[in-house]
Image 1: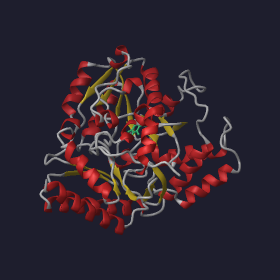
Image 2 (image 1 turned 90 degrees about the vertical axis):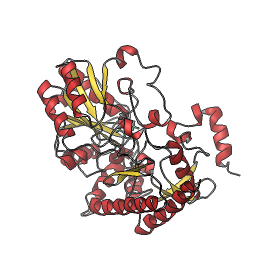
Image 3 (image 1 turned 60 degrees about the horizontal axis):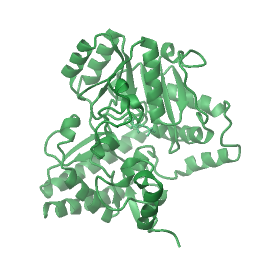
Image 4 (image 1 turned 135 degrees about the vertical axis):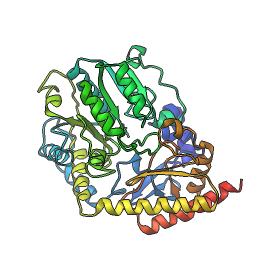
Length: 429
Ligand SMILES: *Cc1c(COP(=O)(O)O)cnc(C)c1O
């Protein structure tokens, strides 16, 4: 007899902190039993009780082709016949590096790592080495993984749980991290004035996804590019979420801005653990063994992750792939808006490509402060009402939802109907 979610979670609570391996999975922000997933196929997942859900989390973004895409699975099966790890170079990782470079012209050299966290941590190290400076600048509510320097005013799970900046981060390090509000060009200029020629790097989610989805204001990224160039500060676009998501070439393609360094992850691993950082040759050639900046990884360039990534990228290059995904996302968002209006629920939906967030507020959401004005209790009720109707949304107001190419027009219609019923239930309270 298989254990059910409730029993599994009780057991997990004894074995793992909070019962989970990553905080948001515990559903603390929305209530209800955490999901225990048995399997996924296409746009749907099935839990251990056998209930099926349309999935808008998609492993927090990586599964842009949906679960168990047959061609990705086939690519993985081939690797299983030849070996899963060698700790030595393989042809496929050279090919993946080539594809990344083709997708991101700003990336002249790239290093593969095992997670987004590793990628941002290493990118900061390179920027500090290149400039001989120690301070970095990030934006409030932007999440760049859990490295010490970056766990300051971070979004994602930190925002979800309402945690202050994490204990365990040495003050000496946190003091080197300057934060300003996202989308605030005046505050940005002030920070560059105060820390004149002292900033090693400025790191940004060019489309924020970890305070919920927030697009950059017109001119904001361009101002950032100019200021960084003027002061010799390394501009890092953290495209772990947006790379291959908002466009094949990421937000830098969408907005036409070239950063000095880029971090990647999620989609480029096709659902396996992966990350990458890359950029100008002059910066990346500082990395060992080309240069003195140390960074290494036992499983880096792992054959399974590389094979899943290569096949995923190949399928993303199909003509019209992003246009179709965009149209699907727009029809869902338009449907959600119409249903919210009908039920008189105050809702602001932000969308960039196939990532979006319905914020339970009437006001525009342009930064972390405005995102935090959303009614998180209402979001929690919405989440639970959708779940009852077989729709799985991110279990937090401050996370983006995603659409995959496995979602059909019928799936979207089903989701809009379920959301309509959920909004009506909310409004009747
Ligand atoms: C998910 C994410 C990370 C961290 O990646 P992990 O693989 O979870 O370590 C970093 N930056 C952004 C923008 C992300 O969305």
